Image 1 (cartoon, rainbow, N blue to C red):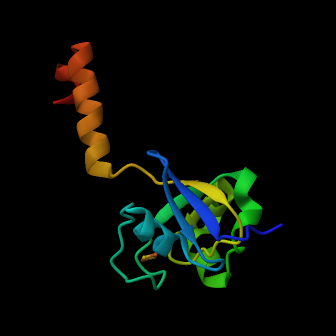
Image 2 (cartoon, rainbow, N blue to C red; image 1 turned 135 degrees about the horizontal axis):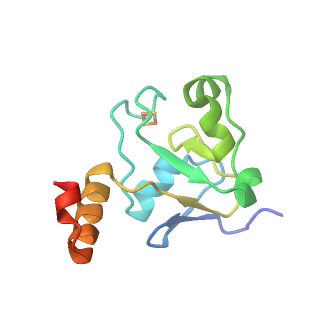
Length: 122
Ligand code: FES
């Protein structure tokens, strides 16, 4: 049964939420939730920067991938990776936004510094 008052999309980490109309893309929902999904192609499935993970529990809450997305993502689809710009929502769901690579590198170095392992990383 579809929600009467819109679809609630929760972005993790951070549990930021947006209520959107059925058929809205995850990229649009992210913007509404204040979550930044990087994009260079403006949502034309060319840059692959808007990847998010839709867990298996929510696979039925989004539109299945079309041919262009299948070609772009290949086996990543099996891991639940989707293009935010091409994935329309049908029902309430949670998606995981990958950590920014630069932030991830900084976080790993800070964690290593706390453990006293800086020589291995620099
Ligand atoms: S925004 Fe470029 S592939 Fe989705």
